[in-house]
Length: 428
Ligand code: AMP
Ligand code: GLY
Image: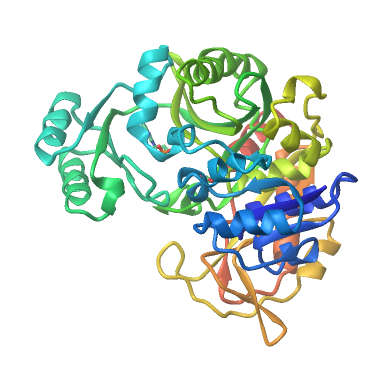
């Protein structure tokens, strides 16, 4: 089967790496891909906002499966356009992608389906937002409704911070995404991520992970797209996983199906493990980046078979995904300046030396300049390793990081710290 993968980051390199290993995969195309993806796929230029152009490419190249990496083309309805022409697509419809595309949509759905999540108000004017703040009191959470590249959420510890966030949203900083907002009750607890595949009716648990959103060691400094992750996340015990499936994921999938907008693809949820049990923080309609990188390193099943069955409503007919019991851990190497303006063009050497340690280095923001590899984005490389424990995976990942030569880059030195501390306390 010929496959077209859309996207250009570390998540897409990990997906391409795994898709290309499948005996079911004939030609793998990637648009636009990156120099890492190009090692296993043919990279092409294709404007994903031009649905007719994507359809024409799929027709000309007899594409049997389209895998959509990032959320923007899903929220933009690309999968509907492709399905309308008879193509198999891994990724939800535009209506179902609202689970990520509109925070208010998701909160209302949770209310209709009785799914545990933080109490909330949907607001569309500054005055209503300020009234909601007064109702909830600080700490409180303010979210722009639409996609805001991970920058639309403020967890405000004081009323002054909260009011500032509200003013920012309604001053137009997030454009359309900020025309509406959600004001939410603050939830206390540890966060974890969970992934499930669904074709609209069958649900197949995939894997758990935990990421590190702050830029600095000890979870300090500004938020980023994620500075590192590991999978599985032992904090999500089998009992908690079962509860998340039963109380959050299953009612969501059922509700979407009943409302005529079945969700097909991967459901990525952020959950808060509160004193009252797990509660939904948010949904994403795609794999996490860098969570995907660690899950792909552990996945033993054929990814093409899984994603194709998901796209064609055949999940019930195939074996559920199998994963190695190992932990996989990834360290993000970012360019100096990230998450502000990253320094571009810095030379990257030593990837082979890093991989000689047994790690896998995924490209996230790289480019070729005069045949030499350089940094071209904020998050540049994902140095990913496996081990029998988080402590071992962490040691291997940092040994690979130390073999890299990327002078204009940096990374956190403590990815996995929570679990490493727990393993130490348990004498593992
Ligand atoms: P989101 O984009 O909705 O995942 O929010 C980004 C981050 O804000 C989450 O990963 C949490 O750390 C935090 N957050 C979101 N909602 C809440 C909440 N209701 N209570 C506490 N923290 C939250
Ligand atoms: N790492 C978080 C995300 O992909 O949204």
